[in-house]
Length: 170
Image (cartoon, rainbow, N blue to C red; front, side, top):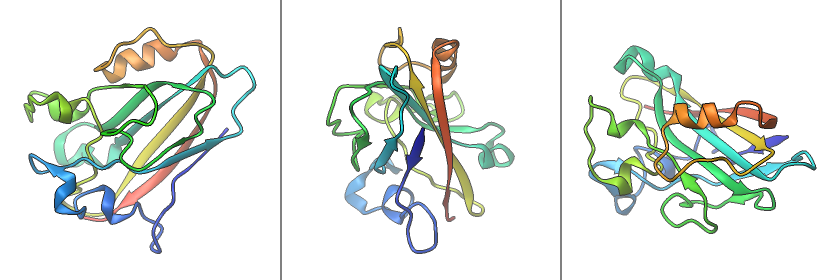
């Protein structure tokens, strides 16, 4: 299984998908335009795929790995999510809660906390992790799932996985 995201000339996630995005792509000071994702070489038994996009470099800043986006139950025949798929999905898929809903932030708008929220590293370049999973079934989740619920649902159902690091500048 392979996952790819087109990077800019500095081998970083393009500015348009984080804190340097166009003003019209922000809501409540959060960048909401998600980046395109391409997957390939899924095992033949794959029924759906799922993904997580997190920031372990946020641990020294806020005390935990920031959840930026998660998705599940994408049909196996869908091999690409275009830019802004979080806000304008080309196909039905579930999206989980991100870290803006935490008690430390307290976001109350589900159009923000149940979708992609882009990188905004405050201190230095951060290395974001995009993990993608080929899954043998439709996962028993609902929209707005928590990351731990996704992890539990994936147990015993991952056929293959891939991870890439997506740097984004401060």
